[in-house]
Length: 308
Image (cartoon, rainbow, N blue to C red; front, top):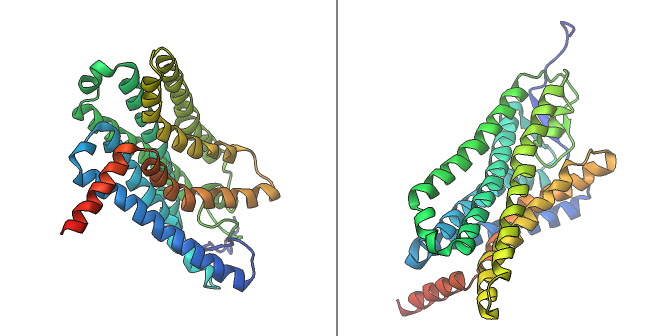
């Protein structure tokens, strides 16, 4: 580096290249979706907290999923909304790294929590008589703490490796927020180590969990097929159908690992937007609409409110 080289202290988030009218429209649409996602996940948390029938391992992990979804959206959406109505779309270096750290931490933790939830469903259906013994509150706490710790440890590794890189221009991040691959493109040094660590982390939090969940659901499907009565099969499948829908939505993110080009960058923005805005809203809707216990708890809460 030359001695006259200037260092980047802030980045510009490019976002979508749209007209001012369209950006204002998107601001209101995204604001409503963000508010609804917070409300929906807040309702899930409230119902689990208030209804004693929902004090089970399945809903314990679901409450963690709701917290992750609320935090995941709150990390990216507010800044994105500000940028939609503000011509100055800058973000300082330290907040940019912090946004990357939190984004990766919540994403990795969600992957691991989904694996834990699939294990919970596996035990519930394949070993129903030993369920309360295996899924003790001590094990549930250990699994939850391990998921959060592993997720944010991996995120911390990414953040440390990102901080060691020099950034001397250009400073335009071609994304909606400080997404790590988009930021790495602006580095003035070799980023192969960062990319290798990202690939290894993706294998750990995406590929391995996906394989574990596939094995779990193959065992679950085999156990369901061995049930004699149709009503028993329907009841067994209904206990894991909501989680299966959420897993299917989330791990469609595997497409994100495909090497990018100029066209892929725009597709990645849309995909990221989906998982930042729509996924946190769809998760509580799936669990509330397809879950009889959750609907019963919601109706009970409404009846209590009417009697007050």
